[in-house]
Image 1 (cartoon, rainbow, N blue to C red):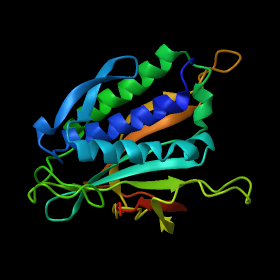
Image 2 (image 1 turned 45 degrees about the horizontal axis):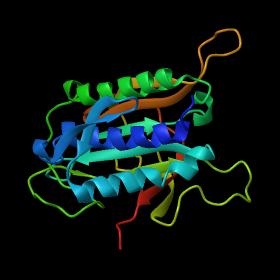
Image 3 (image 1 turned 135 degrees about the vertical axis):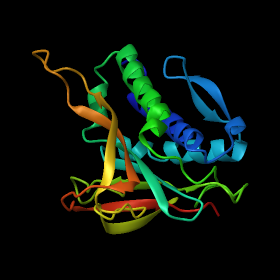
Image 4 (image 1 turned 30 degrees about the horizontal axis):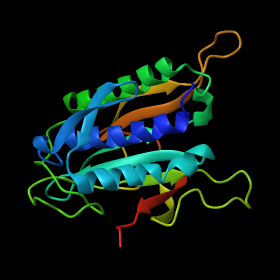
Length: 241
């Protein structure tokens, strides 16, 4: 693509977070507006300056990890008013994002735009949560009768042990967290609902490219048996000082 693929992915993460916050009632509906992104496709965006600055800065801080193929997953747990986990939205990067660079701008915008549409439709797969919300480890609460949210990140080990850490100083590390219980405390057996996969460029013989971005949601209010997952390194965004 002609545009920087990482610019598109940072913008996608920003739009994805705003979409989740809007459709899960974390802030009032009038706290959001439509903004053209990714080839002028309308997406939800926060009208609250503090929330906008927080989310945009958070996603921009992940750019170095994406460039080094160190970003594994971005996780957004949503908790009910009671404090119980309701669901966990996840954007996963199974392959190097640079594999999208050979795609056309339109292909990238269409794929990422479709993923945002699936996120907006995701409440149909989930039950209603306990109201609308505030942010945990995020901008200060404005209502006490709304769900809470936070952002966690999992990174890959560096191929070269001498390489610097993937995330900047604003992130605090929580190593060795098992995915079965996972950052955010999702119970083992929570129902996983796939939303959209985004592929990299096609191979030399026209075969489908690898999955570069996978978007899904884990419903913690429903359970089914699943096998234990392996451990992973994780990080949590530290509150601004």
